[in-house]
Length: 211
Image 1 (tube, rainbow, N blue to C red):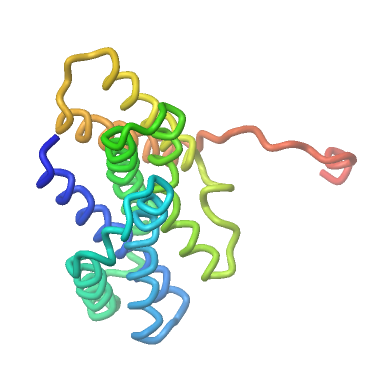
Image 2 (cartoon, rainbow, N blue to C red):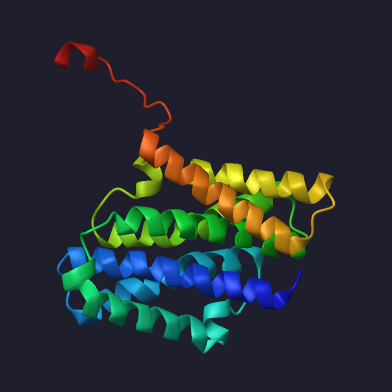
């Protein structure tokens, strides 16, 4: 697999999640430092969790200044453009979907390259994709979207599973697998959001009566 493609996916996913972190900070009325902190933490969080779990240490964000730089620039641009951009679109949802797809594909690919088991590859993809979002929501004092939203972690798991199947049973190359997995996962997340696909939620005793 082309290392430059992997690096591109990693930096691109970092930028996308940095946007969601910065936007969340702006909507929470944080100052510039708070917005940049959210951008850096959310942008780098998933990749750092992935690298720590699969033993790729020191983590990429500590070895390459470009991760930090991209997050800072992204955070500054979001802060400056917030009067005309933030709030007009569901920026977090759609950027999250793109980041979810990119980081799911990358997480599975990196784990596969290191010879991690199939289950480990799927978990690596999921943790890479949802790690930054969990940090963002926890810092915002909210229940993480991964536990409540329409097919969020579920989309990541399905995408990671598809990568594993295609990688083991088709002649597709690594770059094609990255692209297909990213598009499939992002598309599934967006469709689930638009049509409100949800996993079932347990009902508690007496819930029907209260309704």
